[in-house]
Length: 144
Image 1 (cartoon, rainbow, N blue to C red):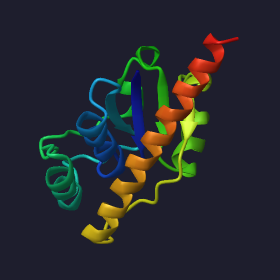
Image 2 (cartoon, one colour; image 1 turned 135 degrees about the vertical axis):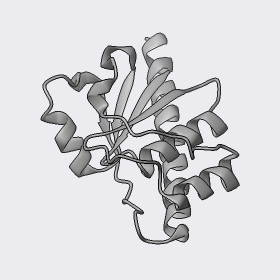
Image 3 (cartoon, one colour; image 1 turned 180 degrees about the horizontal axis):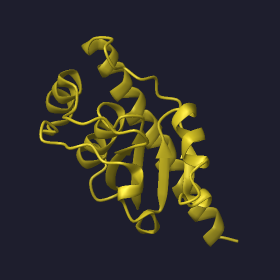
């Protein structure tokens, strides 16, 4: 399953979601991350710290990318990390709407490492729930 995680600047939540997918859901998810308005630079130090400490992933070399820099047809799902991002994605004609999902992960930018840790735990739970939902849906489709 290929998922593109999209947040606003591609500096916090979506790189964390990519790292969590690689660490906790390896073999089940191939993940990438992007932003609707990517800021130049590297992820915030708190995001780098959380990815390293909890998920054993080094995202310090991550470079921001715009969602439209990707070949969107290559992804099974595109997940907007909050309602604002989701609405911006729905307004882009290039985004395949049938692949689009929205979550509500608060932006931890500038709010301290504890907020990043909380966001990471929330992202991990959302990924778990999403996988369970997709797997149940596939099972039900196969048994009918």
